[in-house]
Amino acid sequence: MKKKKWWRWDGRMRLFLTMELAVVLPAAALIGFSVWKLHSIQRDKVIEAAIQRDFQRMLKVSEKRLVEEGYALLQAVRADFPSPEDRLGPALEEVLANHPYAAHVFLYDEKTGLLFRSQPGRMEEDDFRRESEKLHAGIRWIKTETEYLREQFYKQKESGYPQVYTMPTWAPRKDGRGYQIVALFPLPKFPSERVAVGGMVFDSEYLTEEFFPAVFDKLLAKDFAERSGGGKAASSEVAMMVRPKGMKKPLATSAGWDAGKPEVERNIEMSFPGLTLAIKFQGTTVAALAQEFQRNALLVIGGLSLFLAGGILLTYRNVIREMGLAKLKSDFVSNVSHELRTPLSLIRLYAETLELGRVQTPEKQQEYYGIIRKESERLTALINNILDFSRIEAGKKEYSFTDTNLSVLVRDTLESYRYQIEQMGFAFDVRIEDNLPRMQVDREAIARSLLNLVNNAVKYSQGEKYLGVNLYRTNGLVKLEVIDHGIGIPRSEQPKVFEKFYRAGDSLVHNTKGSGVGLSLVRHIVQAHGGQISVESMPGQGSKFTIALPMQPPAGPPGATA
Ligand code: ADP
Image (tube, rainbow, N blue to C red):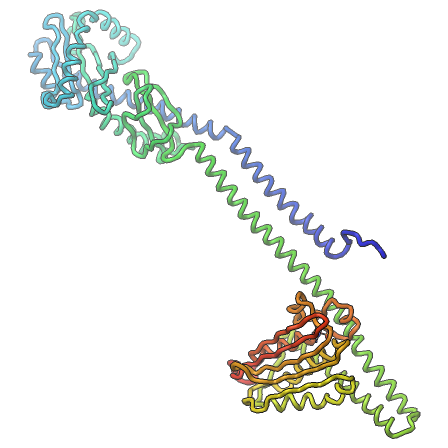
């Protein structure tokens, strides 16, 4: 016996290779490339670096802005400071009244000494009073440092910087947010040779609750959008905060700041020493954004791949089915030709014999005429089957339903074949219930269905020759059963026998003439009557085909096109 190769160079193999080369390979390459690209995007730190640069620039701008705004406030206070002729004490109190953001102001003059005033309205608060006392005591060092300060101011003036000397200090506050700035400055209304220094302390609550948040929000609302030219870190998604250097907890934040890790930080050197500015995306981080982008892209690619795989599978299955059908069709043509040939040659043989006058006895003649008639009937039946089938395929099959006594129809149809069937040696067992209701059926079609089933039962019976036909009513249905004790149909093939052109793989079947359209025709007819056909069968034991018709006719007018 020839050894079977594990593969065969047939249509299936060719199709498989074509799909593999034309669809699967490019698709797989595309998917692979996209995934690889995604990974390299993640590794690619260029984007991240660009965002970091953007953020750094924003922080620089913010620092400048904070310093400018802080200085403007300071200037306003300084301009209100008195001249030597004024009554200094009341003048300082007026400064406080005019500038609520100044918690304390003080003036040191060689002549008058140190004058220190705090916001009178807040002196009832314990924290504030202690703050005032602490500052008042602490600021005394100024007396010994005037020369140093004057030198600083002079240098600042020479190099065009604002003349101010700032120091951070911590006011006693329970929440630890008592950041303050002490600012010292020369007095504009005092003669420059006179040793005098003015000072103010920014109100700690004002700084953390008003000043910083307001500057942040102004920056984020407008300035960044313009300055960063709508850069990668578009300002509306950004949040900022300021915290004491070395501490995690923010002192003040812009709107939208969450507890997440800052993306970029910057220590403020001038004006607000001891503070660190921080910036981040609202509610997310650059790394999380990158991850999310990657995850989304992977999801999309995954989804597309699934679609692609599904599409390929469907195409493959469809093409395989079409190929199978094409093969069945070509088998059908040769099957039909074979089936036509046998009755034709018989008819010719007997007709010729009769024509030559070689048949002596009238009985023999009768027998030959009978054979010719029988074979022509077989031909007619076969051709009708095929014509019907092609009408159905073209969607042109029409049924004409008429009021029918099914018992009579079945009995008459069988009777005309009884002799023939019994001649072939079949035990023919017909049980027909008589008092069935009349039904709307296409008589010719139902008779043809029955004959197809009977014909199959006869064809596919090898050993025990038994043919049973039952007609009875049950549960609102009329059932017509055709039973044989023939070769049977394997379970796996049972649903397929109703498909067009399908013939079971059994070699016994292939030795039997047939076209593979009979059962598909029967199924169509039965369904057009609103009924169903089913099969029970065991290989080697026989088969039972059952047509179940509803006693109520199907909806729609009789004679409808099916
Ligand atoms: P065919 O012309 O081949 O008989 P059918 O459509 O009538 O075509 O039947 C389809 C196939 O179903 C047959 O080829 C055969 O394999 C199987 N079959 C039909 N009826 C029987 C039966 N009574 N016993 C066993 N096999 C059957």
